[in-house]
Length: 238
Length: 188
Image (cartoon, rainbow over all chains, first blue to last red; front, side, top):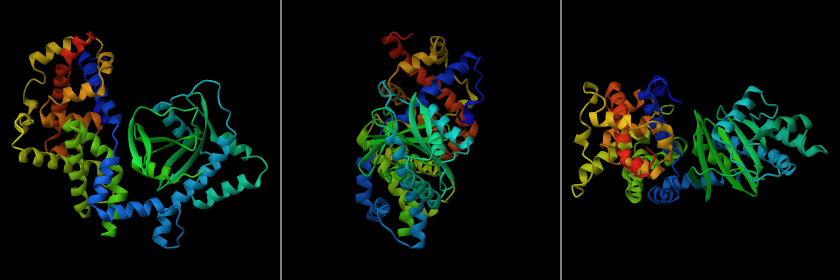
């Protein structure tokens, strides 16, 4: 809620009307829009932007020691490393007997804030930490250290999802992964990155982007712009 | 130019969906909305040097979008049905915020949240389209985009009080525009 709404008195019928109208309008914020055609038009009009976007999409595959580029690629590599950890966790997830569930933005926000409040063991704030988590995982007989497994698992819409809390550009970002068959994508606004559609939702200051790929449901939650979260999600490799 | 492209990509590009969504609600026609969003983004790209890092990219883009929209409306003399900017020149702050008609409309809404939830997005957008441009834009910034009144006031270049009164009046006008549909749908 923004401060514009705080002055409305819920006991006042006129305020109730105002609030209901404002709330209905607020729902238009999740109006689905497909940006792919506009992206194409802009890239055609701005070749320098197209080059920049192409460079960005290649960044996860390109190794370079150039200092400036390294700074840009570092969080992306951390995301990739963290997701490799999550991929292992998801491999042992128990598929629930009920059908796919839909997590509300409020529920996802709660998971994010819970992880922050718990000072999650799996928090990753650097490529070194992510690599260590990865090394811990790959050297052990079990898929994940027990403490990390416990910390990573959260219940979302009564489904088990694996979560890692990361710090990207100084901002907390939760990455959640579940089996695609367990979670539905919302009917919400979508944005396109690299040919992949990302469903966008928000709750307060938090943005959330969701997609499904490689039979996994992926959700990134944080205060970073939805486009940036989608850009990070695009780098995910299992 | 590489730096400009990098800055644009980092700070402005993530707002593309928000720009297109606002354009879509403002214009109704999908092609016109895309043209508006494209022109907004192109102007933003060309003016990226004037955007201060750390400031509100969305507000900056909304300001550009509004100016582009005004230019396009003024340039399209061939659209007699297009909205009149003059219709928004009034300041409802010094008038009764709701007309008698709107007041009667409000009395009809017993369970507003439930009734308003029954309308589809398209129905709400069509009702919004009947409002004066600047009132519609105020509602889009304040209620849809959830901007603070002070930020919306900067974008629309009016005092904060005007934003508050336009938002209040706009919500009433929207309910009034939706009332016949609500009756037709037997919601009230």
